[in-house]
Every structure is written in structure tokens, then in C-alpha cells.
Amino acid sequence: MSSTSHIDQLLAEAGSALKSAATVSEVGEINIRYLGRKGKLPEILKSLKELPADQRKSVGAAANKAKGKLGALVAERLGQLDESPVSNLDYTLPGQSNRIGRPHVLSATMAEMTAVFTRMGFATATGPEVETDQYNFGSLNFPEDHPARDMQDTFYLRQCDGLPAGLLLRTHTSNVQIREFEKRTPPLKIIAPGKVFRHEAVSTRAYCVFHQIEGFQVGENVTLGDLKGVLLAFCREFFSTDVKLRFRPSFFPFTEPSAEVDMSCLLCDGAGCLLCKYDGWLEILGCGMIDPNVMQAVGYDPEKLSGYAFGMGVERVTMLKRRITDIRLFYENDLRFLRQF
Ligand SMILES: [Zn+2]
Image (tube, rainbow, N blue to C red):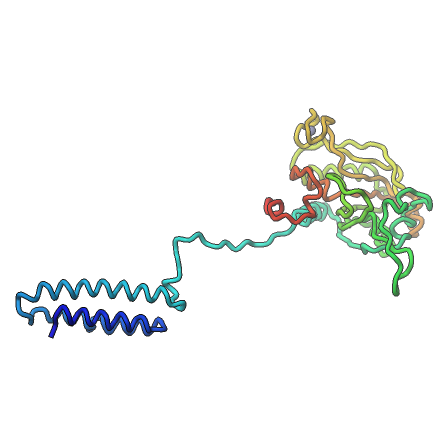
């Protein structure tokens, strides 16, 4: 017998069954039992023709209404059950992006610089960051009383268990020069990228740790002209522009003659702007011909061999190329800064 009261009863029955259903598959069974092809409500609709004509309309309407209501209850219950994979997904929410890591801008720049020198035939070498006074200063012709040896500039290691006395954090990558000279026989052409340490006040332009790329070539008839050619080729390739270089006489204990090198300003090409402080030139590195004393100390004959060396600051070059105005940004690990590169 189908009647509207019977339909109400089915609906109440299905409703309480849904409430006690604890899993998605239980809800699925209830759905089939009441709403499936051979379910209780569709059966009522199929048997409408057996009813007296005056009841067909009201029973049909009640059965359809109950189907709609029960369908909504099933969906609601599925939404409440955690294991339902579909109901808990809101496809309208923005997706979660997986951020991919990348090399730090300094590492990337150092790799880029190394690649340029590699194409010019330089081999790459590294050396220790904790160094002896001899490799950091002595073999590089620093006199005993040179100001760079002063405690103001150099971090010395406190002597403790098992450590020999007089160790320091290298103040430049030039220690690699000496270590490679001892290992190899010229001709040689090497770059040495790495971290160096100076006891300096931190400012927008100076930090207590920074990176250098040291380069040197030793052989017969290596001249200042070779040095200028290598540096000009590097700058033009690395900065992708037709820069000019200017060599200013300078002094370093381990080179003679020594020079500081300026590059024509990347922004104004010499006319003067904020980047170059209206000078038209940007200082980028120090260099020179390797001092005969340094050669002699490692057993090279300065009468037969000659060589040049240069050292450039990776931070300085990165700041110029990427227009970064504060060196401290490199070390603060602020993702808003790092993600720009
Ligand atoms: Zn300028």
C-alpha cells in the first residue's frame, strides 16, 4: 500500500538511518535502499498506476518531494563524514603552490663568474678557510709589521685542544695561490673562489664575511698585457656590455706593480650617475704582477717565469650587476629579497 503517510514514514526511517551511518559505504547502502533504481521511493513512483486515480497525484508529488529531500540528506551526511574524498574538496579554493628552492644569489653569481673563467681556460682550485699566518701573510710577502696583520683586520683562532697556535680565518683567497704554487709546475692558470673573513665594522658596503674570486697565471712571458686582456674579456662577457677598464697604480705586498681596476659605469657609461657617485667609474678589483719574492719563496725562478694575480669581490660584482645597494641583504635570509633572483 502506498500512501503519503507511508512515504513520510520511509523518509523518517531513512533519515534516522543516515544519522547513525558512520561510514561513507553505509551512507551509500542507504542511498541505494531508498533512492536506487530498485529503491523504495522509485518503486512507489513505478506503482502509481496501480493506485486509484484520485490518489495518484498526491502520492506522486509526495514521493518526488521525499526523493529530493532524502538526496539532500545523503549529500549532507557524506559531507559530514571525514573519509569522503569528494565532499571535503573545495575546488574553488586557490591551490597551494610548491615553492622550489634555488641557489642563493651569491652562489649563482659565483658559479656564473667561474663559468666565464673556465671558458677562458682557467682551472678551479679551493683552499682552507682556516689558515696559518704563513700561507695567509708570510708567503705572500707581508712584512711582519704590515697593518693587515693587525688584530683589527684579522680573526685569530683561540688556541685550544689539539689546535696549533697562530691559526686565523683567511683574509683573502690568495692563500690558494701559495698552496697551488707548491703543488704544481708552471705553466698554470687557476681561479680560486671562496669565503674570506675580515674583522670590519658592518655597513652597507662591508661585512665581516664575504666572497672572493682569486685568479692567477704563471708561465714564461706572462705580461701585464695578458692580465688586462683577461680582465677586459671577463668584464665584457660577465656584464654583457662594452665596458672600459681603468688601471690605477696601487700597492699589495704580493704583486709588483699593483693596480686597482675601475670599470666604466654600467648605468651612465662614464657620464656620472648615482650608481657611480657621479664619477663615471666603478672600482671592481685589485691585481698586479706576482712579486718575485713570492715566486722565490715557492721555488719558482723569477728570471724565467712571470705571472699575474687578481682578486675580485663577489658581493661587489653581484651588487653592481643586480643593482643591490646594501651588502647586508645577502646574509639576512629574507625570502622577499632572495626570491627576486
Ligand atoms: Zn654612473
